[in-house]
Length: 458
Image (cartoon, rainbow, N blue to C red; front, top):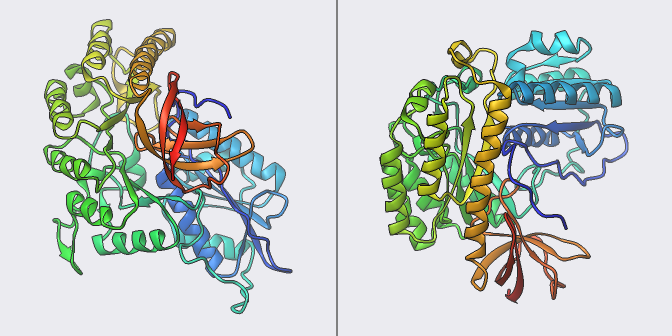
């Protein structure tokens, strides 16, 4: 078992976990899912619809009649990764349908790969299905093709992403998500709860709540109540917490009403974990980003959250080398980190993104300066993480088991989200543990990002 490295690309989705063997003559589709967990949910929905129509899902290129590539188009590096994935699918299979965020720029895709069969944009489910039908006609057998109760999942069966809205109402200058995915569109609360109930009934032990702006959930619906559930993040979190699974909140902007979530964490209804995209700390940098410039007030809020729920764990991502960032502004960010003492941190070096307003800002930072600042920032974040994890040695933690092999069990504490945070390893007396088990462990050792422990009880 290898140690978990620092999270440099928290938007990378996990690999597909497909095991069903197709029946004789069954049309088969492959899926490559890139980008953030929100895109992963889109991939699951597409595959669930296809599975309901009688298609089998192939885990590899060779067994697929066609391959869908769900792309990311947020950064130039992500676009390059998407084009590379499309090219690989064309080489290995030859029949490729492209969807996702990069699909909003079809000429960009067809210019590089003119042989793709179709290109559709983000969350255009019907168009994707039409393209698949044209490439590989369905051939369902209603007596054999049974759909799993929870649909087709691309994550291990014990955790699942739960998308509560699409789009975003913010206008950050470095971001083109609103252009690709539109303004905020929240799902009705009763529909979210029903999906969550079905997931828990199917064995899911952890629900990971995701959206572009989780704390704005329901604003577009004017927080209306329907079928006994109100479309507000506090109400939704409370309702989800009643289902008996771990509930983890991602992408929460630090609006004042977020403090209403903290008592739910203190009560144990929601995991004491907040994923908040602070991005920077200097007010001038935040202003150029077109983001709320209240870093000092944010520190006050963090202190209040920790006072109300001492166990709370805070994760965030930051951008260094944003256009116009001076050494003084960057030092302010480092000083803010010293005060905030965030538990989990990821960091990006700024990149221009086609269509983003930040491209036109003056005083772009030289690549070597961005790299040097990134290294200094990550050194600071690593030292904070190392100290916080060292303080957990000797404590008893409740953990969820993600995988078990001959070397031991790989687990996560309540402070760790899958794929982006650290792990807790059990390398003795782990026989009998299975993925999805929730057990108590005494922490015996810590590194910069991971823990090791001794199993106490299931």
